[in-house]
Length: 162
Figure (cartoon, rainbow, N blue to C red):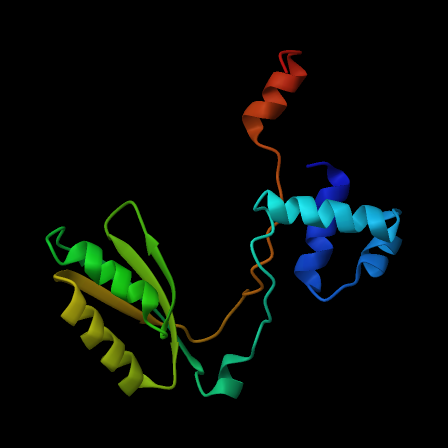
């Protein structure tokens, strides 16, 4: 990827509905050149999908919560995690290093729905410990990624060992 690809990615993250002509005007290329670059980024898996950001409150799910889980690695663990991945109230689920095993992000209508999710989790996994945190507000939640050069590559380039 070069700087033009990175700029195209930044523009698409701001507006996934931007046309190739719109993008071309902003990166000083032709629409057909932008089309080819976007297609290559899709083929390489850099662009995984296009999506719409929806207001959760408009869909009746204003409560955001994070659930930290420590679970037993028993015969329930693999199928339990697979079931969580399919649960419509689980927006994100991460296997993490450190004190916990998993962190789940959810959006629900209210405390009773959050409680129901917690009971579903406990029914699927052998939960040793859980901590639930309710978000009071979102400080930043845009999900935009900015590409950064890695420090080791910069160090090699400065030393002439690229």
